[in-house]
Length: 84
Image 1 (cartoon, helix red, strand yellow):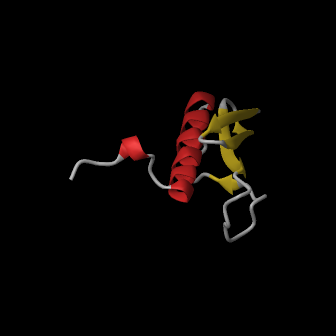
Image 2 (tube, rainbow, N blue to C red):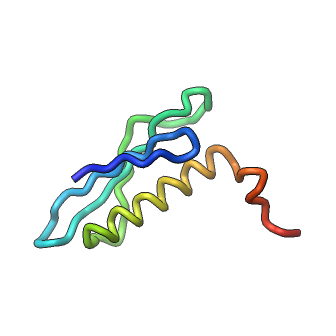
């Protein structure tokens, strides 16, 4: 199963692979943002640990992990600064 989520100008591609009945291993890949100089293989899929997950949980965990990765690459948005 496959889903693509748009986030801050990037695409988070989530792929689920059935492992046992009604449980899935999940991986994600970030695409876009070609203007950033990022070290490493940009085409690689990142498998998530501590699975397998139910389908809904797998999509949620992968989306949050992908968003966190994009946030690390871009930094926090101006309105998201923590209070001092």
